[in-house]
Each structure stands twice: as C-alpha cells, then as structure tokens.
Image 1: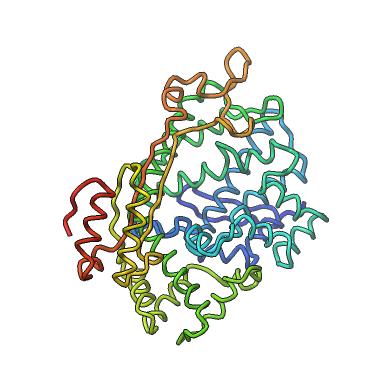
Image 2: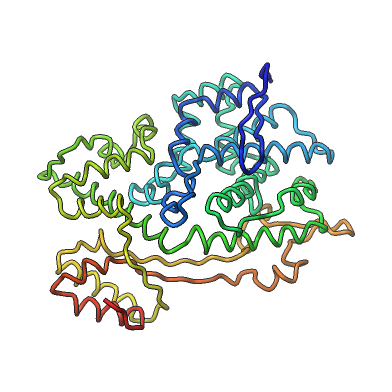
Length: 431
C-alpha cells in the first residue's frame, strides 16, 4: 500500500494525535463525502442540553479509525497477523462506518423512513469519489468495505472489530461523547481494555484480568444512555425536529400550498428513491437555514415549529407507568388536541424506552463479550462477573409523553386536555 511521504496528524482531545500514514486513508478523508461529516453533529440535538456537545461525526470517525488501528497493532503483537488487504479493509470500514448519516441523524431518518446504513452502502457502492478511491485500491474493495459495515463479511473477526458489543465504534463514542458533554459517565479505561484483547478460535476475547475494566465499560454505556443519549430535553428537541420535517412533508403533499422558499431539496428527500447527490447536500446547516426561511411561511404550525427549533421552545415531558387504559387515553388526548387546532402529528409524541446495561441473549454468539480465564477456558462475561450477572437482562423501562403546555394553556379545550393528560400520567400537573 502506498504510504504518505510525510504522515498527516490530527490533534484530538481524546486520543492526543490521530496519525495517518496510508495514502488511501488520507485520500478518503479528503473526499467530499467524508468532509461532509464535519457538518453533521455526532449527537444530533444533544447540544440543546449539553452546550459543548458540538463535536462532529467527522472527528468521531477519525477516532474509530484510530482505535481500529491500535487494535490491529495489539493483535499483531499477540500473533494474529493481518495481511495488507485485511488491514486496509479494517481501517477503511472503521473510517467510513458513519458515512451515510443525515442531519440530526435519527430524527431525519424517522421522518423520511430511511436508514443511514443504507446510505452508507450507497455512498460506498454508487458513483462517488469514495467509491472511486476504494476501487482504485482493489477491484471489488468497496463491496468488501460495505459488507464489513453491514456485518455480512465472512471473516467475523474483522466484523467484530467494527461492530460488536465492544468495538472500536463504541469505545470512541463513549469517550468522545463524555468529554464533549462534560460528563464523567463515559470515562472508560481504553488502555486496559486494549491490552487485554486476544484472539481465541477466530474471535475477540479479553483476559480475565481485564474484567473490571469491562465492567466499567458496560456501566459507562448504561449511564451515558440514560444521562446523555436519552435525556428528556434531548429527546424533546429531536421530536421537535421530526415535527418540523413532518410538517414540511405534509405541506409538500398538499398541492394547494405554495412555499415562499424553494423546497425542491426537501421534495427530493420525500421521494421513494432519494438521489444520492441530493442526499449528500443535506447537513445540519441546511436544516437550520431552512428553519429560518420557514419563519416567514403562511402555515401557522410550520412557523411555530421553526421558531421552537431555532429558539429552544421544547415540549414538556411527562413520564408515566402504562396501564390498560393508556392507549385509550392517549387517543382521546390526540383527538382533543386536534379539535383545539393543534395537529397531534406535530404536537404530541410518545416514546417507550427499554435499556439494559448488557443483554447478550438473542445476539449472535460473536456479539457477546467473552473472557479468557486463567485456565484457558472462554466464558461469557456475565457467567464470571457477579456484578454483570446481577444486572444482565434487567432493563430499565421508561415511557414518556411530550406536548406543549404553552399552547394548551390558551385553548378552549384546556380543561379537557389537562384532565385527560392527568389520568394518563397518574398525577396532577401545574398548568
């Protein structure tokens, strides 16, 4: 593989220096499809809660590449030798694994009914600069990289470095997201985890001496989900983005409504087959820019949603324990809001979460975390760790309703809506 004359170095607050020595990796980083990731936040709307969470999928992707490179070095020293093609396959898959993310990723995907993994594969395989670079390295190489990311590549060891219960992706995002949110929850012992990596029977295992670092890793993941990724305000903002996009789609389908701004790019997003060139034009800045344009639209709901998006006008959230009457009460709530003039598609949202610290049941056998015991036996971690055994498959459950009380306060249906909401959540609220 052609090497750079002078290595390229990215200064990184998580890994100190991310070094690039391979010409192909550097060319991929410089490709416009990868540079686009600079304009997409790693954590979507989480900056609404943690204002310094402005880091991008670009920096995360570099971090995953860095950790994958370190994994290769560790395993090579332990006697697992990767040939040059496999080494580049691992590094390219690590670098490009998030290539298809759209703006405010999961909200964008939910409304448009698309999957970022599908678009990652399309960018890898269709007529793009990334595809040209991969194919120039080796004919069919783009398909190999796609297969690794899609977890269909036949070499499960290579796949597990990128996608498993403990992979380069998760190791980087826990450290990076913890740092940029200013929270301590994701502070894991990366060095210890890497030092105890081994290969046994073609699978990644970890020496039992590293078990405590793995326990910390699993608890960190759990805490980051509940304190950061699933924070109520973050979810509320993500729902606001969904509502905004959903309203744009609804108005586009209304042939009689005429936008004051050019929404042809959005029209292409709502097509059954989204053009890859149009998709690559979408980033966080595009959504923000159009939200500013929408403030001048005639549609009252679109204007309101755009203003909330730009000015942090979050919906109120209410946690509750579901009962046999919950579905009926939720439907009544939606009906009352619609009668008051507030489209429930735009202003009412329910979400149910189930999150476990570590749930290996039902996963592929190579997805679980396995320990290499002092006797040389390989055992799944919860069968060795009393801490993990005590919490495995014991998920935390949470149901939450989101709606805007500020709008409900001024509607003539206020009393009926509040009464229904109180019955649904099982307590009184101050309106």
